[in-house]
Amino acid sequence: MKRSHLLPQIEIIPCKVCGDKSSGVHYGVITCEGCKGFFRRSQSSVVNYQCPRNKQCVVDRVNRNRCQYCRLQKCLQLGMSRDAVKFGRMSKKQREKVEEEVKFHKAQLRAQNDAPPDSSVFETQTPSSSDQLHHNYNGYGGYSSNEVSSPYGYGYSTSVTPQQTMNYNEVSTDYVDSTTYEPRGTIMDPDFVSHADGDINDVLIKTLAEAHANTSTKLDAVHDMFRKSQDISRILYYKNLGQEELWLDCAEKLTHMIQNIIEFAKLIPGFMRLSQDDQILLLKTGSFELAIVRMSRLLDLSQNAVLYGDVMLPQEAFYTSDSDEMRLVSRIFQTAKSIAELKLTETELALYQSLVLLWPERNGVRGNTEIQRLFNLSMIAIKQELEANHAILKGDVTVLDTLLNNIPNFRDISIMHMEALSKFKQQHPNIVFPPLYKELFSIDSPQDLT
Image (cartoon, rainbow, N blue to C red):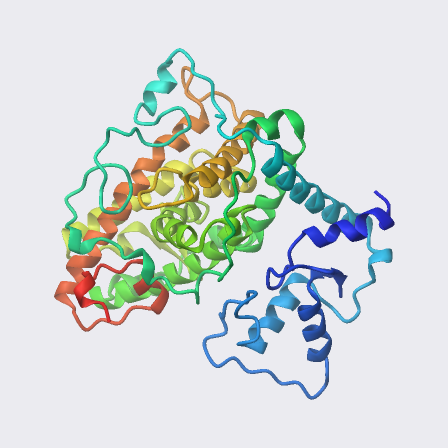
């Protein structure tokens, strides 16, 4: 693709910094004119931006002018540089990356115009033993319609009371980008992807793999920690923490992980096209589940220990005197371990996270068709990756079967977490959790909300 052809097509890709309409590659990154000008002005020697909050402000089309410090940090993290070469002198690797992005966005646009309204990834087949593994799923992997809905939208009954139901509207736009929602008939149709533009699957895989890599601790660093000798003093410190201190410490670590999960979600192609209500709902119901998936790559199976911040902690370090909390910890470790044992690649973990987050049968979502199509794309992609890298496990059970069968475990554990949190808050009413944790896992009844 020649420069003269590629340059105007770049503008279909939104600004990498704020999501507004881009105008080309500026200082090495595809940005809008506003972010281009901001970065140019930020290079003045007299500039000394300060963040009035916690250096984690959302930078989007609506909020980009609220915090200059965080906006500049995002520019730098994306690779903007005064010394960046101009478009005509981009490296081959940079040019290929831009071409792939253009190709992906063009395919999205074509799919919106050309795809038939309803098509399914899977054809009806004769049930096999692998089908029996996940008999609670229908043809595309959602829960069957005759199951009892829980207040959490997980598709099955639970003992949690209505007062413990999450209020989806509580997650503010400080954590999810504020975007203008424009209804679309379709986003991408799986049949279109499979037959009309097969290489879009490879682009999706690369995009998600890069999103995961940019929002996760590097695997080499994780494995380096696995090889270090245990820090007995740190382990004893955590084992001796009181219940309140341990809850708060875990909430802080989880909040940090979920901030990365939110950034990952925003990089999933098509996610930011969903209505803001659906974005928030998917993150509220799915972020804890994705945290378990991410935890699996931090597990050292030989020690049954997890990389917790900068220390390896065994499972028993998280136990308290409360039997429900002990069961919750055991279940989390058990499920994360079952994923770790599959030895998924980083790319497969990225695709699995997308699959879990975009589960289309969550109660309360409005854009079911659009979420379904995004889910279908992730299903096609992960199926391709797993079939290329993994053999059949046992009989005709595949790695994909095992991963899908784990999703109800995520739902169970999420409910166990909410029940344990409800009990803990009743016992410790004055505890103050991190704001994002409090908003994501709110269990206050509507009349208690302020």
